[in-house]
Length: 191
Ligand code: ZN
Image (cartoon, rainbow, N blue to C red; front, side, top):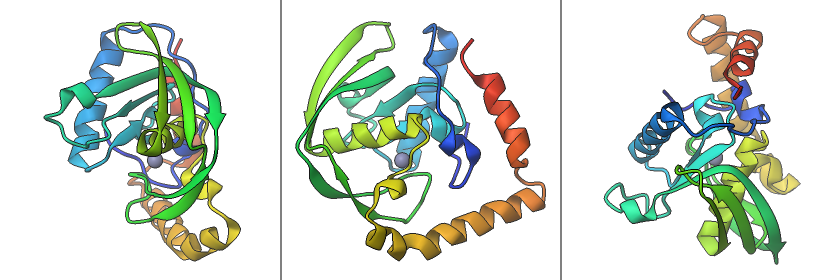
């Protein structure tokens, strides 16, 4: 498992609900947490490891020792959004790119945990921002899509650099072409 970078097609995929929480899902979650910590992240969505599943993991402390802070969100839905707040975001799929994004200040999210138990969480501040960011990933939306036009303009050249690098890797055969990646994603959708 590895993190994929913009503009990998998995980041534009609309992920599908997980039908069954089995050993495969549990193993994927373990690997996602490990990868997230390795890259010093606080959240990671399945799309970012090229899995078209509605799943993301979160530990707002970013500290692997703090197991109590680990949360798994399976088939999440944001059922309520309140207020609006601007704040800086970054993304493991867009290393070293940061920018301000306007998000709901307070949310209620419903999801299933790894035991298949439904839960509901009310979040604000960093938690609300992070869950909205990860939830967006599952819809194929990136935080740069939500930046204001002026802010987006400021990061345009960085985005172009990412795109150039990715296309070069495809041309050299290091990374498969878009069509092949998309066929693979289709195959990996939950059955
Ligand atoms: Zn992200």
